[in-house]
Length: 627
Image (cartoon, rainbow, N blue to C red):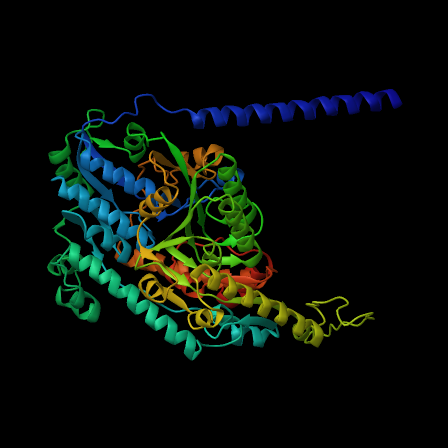
């Protein structure tokens, strides 16, 4: 029996080893298949096609390859803003490109600054006497802003266009949490630091409403000015002041209403649009389907025009997404990861640094980790500039404080100089079910913070003092950076959010300008005669990227057709993301995150989907909202 048992164990071990070997071989072959690219991805005579099956972002997020493969669906596509902008600008001067085409059928939006930069690139193509054509089934604000810069705007006859304007509703959980007996402990400094309000109130405070009203009005004016300049025939007032009457006057035909209001130029389906592009850019010799035309991918055009790498290096490190502790990213700004990139640029002897910030903030500790890395770079006598994209608020401003020059755009959202912490406890909830806690303490802090039995007064006071000290440190960093006193910074701090124009007037920003302008300043400050920019960061490619591309997940190299939605479905999807944020807010409450420097107004203006909540937050969402 002992001999037979040993033989059996040996056979099982051999079997397990073979299974493991076969699995490794399978994934190796899968990776090789997904990595294989067809030869001949060369630029040819035809159009440059931007098929945006997703959103435009500063830095695409990485995806879990196993979840992507097992789930069978790719994550929503994300396109790097600077790659799209550079490809469009190259199209203006490349003689092989006869037209630029944007298919916005499955476009889900992007930040205001990103849309402005891409629109400016489209203007360059038109200035080069080349047509720019845009097609969609439904246009919302971001898509309409891009379309305004086109020479021809096409709309599906069953589609429509709506201008919604910035703003909307923020979910407030105060009454729900009280009903459930959840005791939300809030520690904050800043009259306008309203991120905590949804967890303790049923509506916005007067200071929060005041700041948000002013911010949204400026953002709205910026949007309207951009669209009116690019497309003077667009009747924005008609469309926005009485949208129901405008559609009714067209007999309920949203497409005809858009045409009569000057929002679009022509009505036609995708085939008719393709035939029009074919007449301008030429036929596709490999595809004789109706509406097919000769097209080039952005990646092919970028590869045909590699960036100059001669001379000294001006390093560019991107801080995109929420700032969190650890190595998270890309698409999320893990403090340790970003600091390592800055240290690597220093080790590589980069002569100057540009920090590209597109973040609403997050962890104070992670923000400080990034700031210290920038200080280490600067301590070697090398200049540092900050280029603010769509958002550089709260923690996004914290990491910007070491810069000698801060660049932003009028539509940038920045400021929000304030700090908070939120910790829930459940002593009242549990008491309703007969559960109470008891024990012995050796000090007032024993077992604190106790989310089951409640907090002691000493623990409450200590945590508030810690947050207050963090705020004082934040104000001090800004004062030192801006050459002002702490009292002067207090006048623009208190957690208030500012648009880029107002921030410049108040001394929080030095000048308007793009990432290229910031790099140019940094090179000049470093006294470089010959230089190039080098972008540091992990690319979200590899196995995850290949699987996403295979499943049609919006890779810039992929122009697969996304799901077409009419106007009603597109508007509904826009609001479904808002529902995601309701559950996402509950998820945040259940996470112990330490002191936070985060901007609430940035999340109101951001309609990129959030990860689905898990655990008790998901169950609570099902209980409250159904499903």
